[in-house]
Length: 193
Length: 79
Image 1 (cartoon, rainbow over the protein chains, first blue to last red):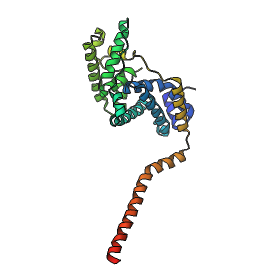
Image 2 (cartoon, chains in turn red, orange):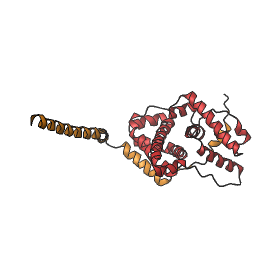
Image 3 (cartoon, one colour):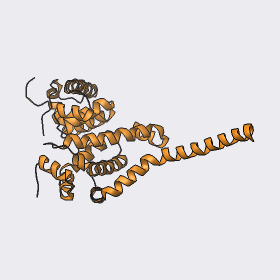
Image 4 (cartoon, rainbow over the protein chains, first blue to last red):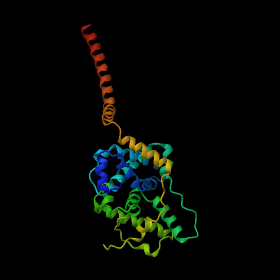
């Protein structure tokens, strides 16, 4: 049985394991992708992925009725990441992970793939504030208002942050000579997935 | 603002997507299910224990210290 997020939220609140399984099936790929791109480290992302879902299960009884569980799940995942990052700064063995950037893909004959590899690499190089809003709106397709909820800021601040982040990314890509003319426009409204 | 999609943001959606491997996916789901079905009373006791254990220990050691302190004062002035 599959339901809307609203139904799933209420079943989750009631402690139904079936609902948890459905939410997991629906969102695990997106949550994992978000964490891998935030941490730039797959192993750390796997740990945080598990912590995120444990936290979802632990707080299931307090899930508010909502027609979209994505902001809640990304908020939990982001909080796990921020907590991990705070400790990582104090753990010398993890500092290297924080500095690590995703490996750019090997040059490919296809221009489109090269462009994607460049976008991937430059996204990983952006400051955290810019990276997370681009991940939420650009990659995950959240509306700027939903991203604002995840980031704990006002919707207008999220829109401004998105515009700045987009400009930063475009500038970096332009420096690499990797920005297609069509992508130079500055419109920043995110559209739902 | 117009409603045309932003081409750069649209390109972000084409980025390769890392996926969870099957063992991790299963392990995490099992752990989350186990967490969801844990006995709430036991969880409440464990949580209360983790919250109050340290303050209780500090209070106990403080009580021992104060008892010793006043014992020594009594020995000096009334012993």
